[in-house]
Length: 437
Image (cartoon, rainbow, N blue to C red; front, side):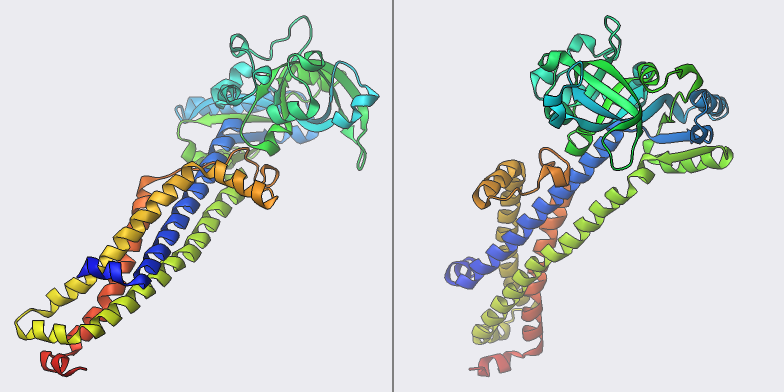
C-alpha cells in the first residue's frame, strides 16, 4: 500500500520535494558556515599567535620594549614551564607603498597605504605557521622561491627584502620581475586627511615574493619585512627608539589562550595580554549566531513538508476507515495499523531526505561554480570577496551534521504520519469504523 500511494498521490511528490529542498538548503548552509568559521580560525591562527602581549613601555616609545617583555616571559617559562612554547617580537607601523625603486608621477594611482610588519623570521615561524602561507600563492611570479623560504627576509646586496600579500602585489603591479622587483616605502606620521607623511622617511625594498591568507582584505593591507630593517627605515636613530610594538606567544594548548592571557595579565600588571579568541571574538560569535538563525528558518521548510505528510496520512485514514474496521474486527491491533500508516510517512521522509542529502553534497562541492554562474546570469557579484573577505568560497562538510539533518527530517516525517493515524484509530472502535460512510 505504501508504494502504491507514493505513485498515485501527486501531493506526496510535493512533500518529497519540500523535504529535499529543506535538507539540501540546510546542508549547504551548514557547510558554508562551518567552512567560513574554519577559514577564519585558520586565518587568525596563520597570521597571529595564540596570545599578543604588550608592555606599558610601548606607549612611551622607549627602547627595550621587547627586552622588557622577554624578561617577564622567560621568568614565566622557568616557573610555569610547558605552557608557553615560543615567543617572537613584532613591530607594526603604517606606510605608503609605491611600485619601483623611486616615486614616479605616472605610478601615483598605484600607491597604496599599508601596515608594515617587522618580524624576526627565525622566531616568527616558531610562533605562527607563517611559512605555510607561501604555498597558497597561485601565481608563479609571486611565489617565494623554495630555496629562499628558510630565510626570505635576509638582505641581498645591501637591499632589504619584503614579502607582500598577493592582492597587494597585484594592485601595486610588482613581482620579482615587474618594476625591477622593487618597491619604495614611505613611513612617518600620517597627517589627518592627507596621503602625505609628516617626518617622512623612505627606503627601497626588494620583493622576495608573496604570501596568501585567502582573505583579500588582509592580503592587500599587510607586508612583512625584517624588524631591524623596519627600525632603520622608521627611525633616524633606531637604537634609541621603540624596538617592538608587541610580543606574540605560542602556547601548548591554543584553546586555553584566553584563560592563560587573563592569568598572565593578572600576575604581571605591566603587561596587556589578549588571546586570538578575544581579538576575533565578534567575528567568530557572529558566524555561530547567523548559522543558528538560518538553520531555524530553513527547518521551517521541513516542518511545512511534514504538515503536508500529516494531511496526506489523515486523508488516507479517512478513506480507509471501513478497511480499518474490517482489519480491527479480524483481530489486527491498533499499533499494527498505526505502524502501516507511519511507514508511509517514513517512506516519504527517506526519499525526500536522501534526495536532499545528495543534492546538498553535490551543490556544496560545486558551490564556487554555481555562484559564478549565478553572478554571470544576474550581473551581480554574489558573495563579493571585497565584502566577505575570502577569495574562494570556503565549505566544510561535517558528517555528524549531515546525519543530524537527515535524522531530523526523518523524525518530523514519522511524527507527522503517526499523529493523525494514532488519534483516529485509537478513538474509533471497529463498529464505528464499519458504519462510517
